[in-house]
Image (tube, rainbow, N blue to C red; front, side, top):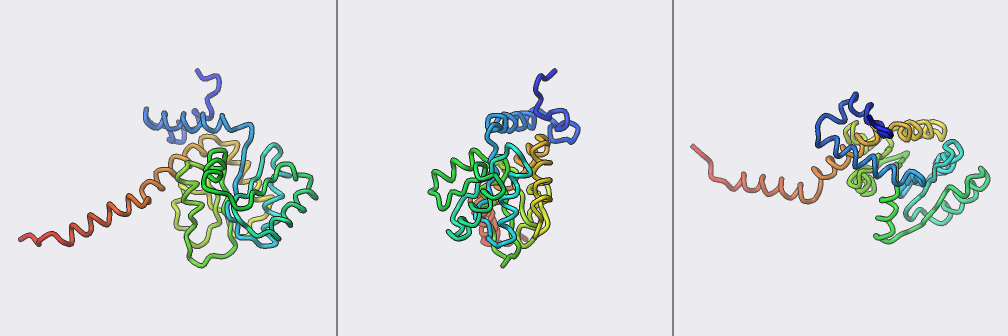
Length: 220
């Protein structure tokens, strides 16, 4: 039997683990999460700042004891100041980190420490998010607003929440993920697979095949 299965039984029941290959992938993800479990970081990368979202960002630690929230990336000094002040008011200033702009190496460090990534928006102009692509490629379970291009991600790749979700509702979503390692492992695996199939290399290979097909002489 398992002294610490990391949710393996649930993973088997939910068909996340079906053979030796998926078992190996699940075990790797479970070990990574266990290694980082003492300092859970939830990263909201390049949050689209609005007054309402300030409350959502800093309320999370108050509703999830032991969880550290980190806002990585440039978000505007006024917004960061407001976040710091509100976090102190809520008594969670020691569990909310606001990094401001970071270099590539530091960003990679944060990705390596992150248990769940959060990317919420109230509006979309049809743009895609590089941050979400990066967290998926890193195998980080990712929560996104269900709008714009985020809605196009398969449901097994990201966790979609309504735009304008409240702090309490977001905390419940995050708590559910933190308490379900099997689902997190499945999201991590699906995220990596999706990112790999949508990489520049994959797009280039597809384009080459299309061009070769178009250039080939017609048969018959």
